[in-house]
Length: 154
Image 1: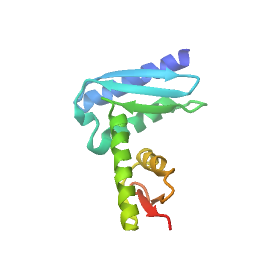
Image 2: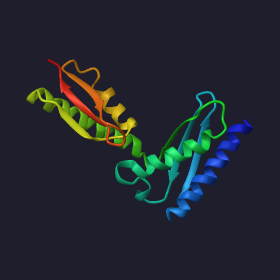
Image 3: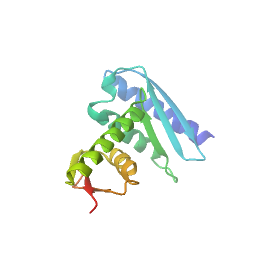
Image 4: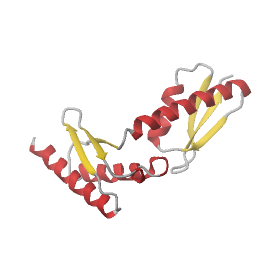
């Protein structure tokens, strides 16, 4: 529909200009699913700097793109921005971390506090460990230093 075509054009223009100004020109591909109210953005080409330390640059671009996409909209679009399958690779890394930390907590029976993470990354850890009967997880602290704490269930 015309609304999503307009959103698509706006996002491509916005992100292309931002990446150009960051001296990281890349191709921006936007897929919009109006039924799901979701937008998938893939940045192709460019260099790894687009990801930034632990995905911080990617998260910032995603946040800005979300504001642009949802400006003056009645219904909210859920937006995911990715490059070179970073999100998928990061999720696997976090699941491995969760597994190793859970094993250590079971062995030592002491809690382990993880490094600060964004809500999306914390959710991956919580979801991965929720079925483990010997472990419980909690997010503690204030953004941007909110972190997952893994506890042994007595």
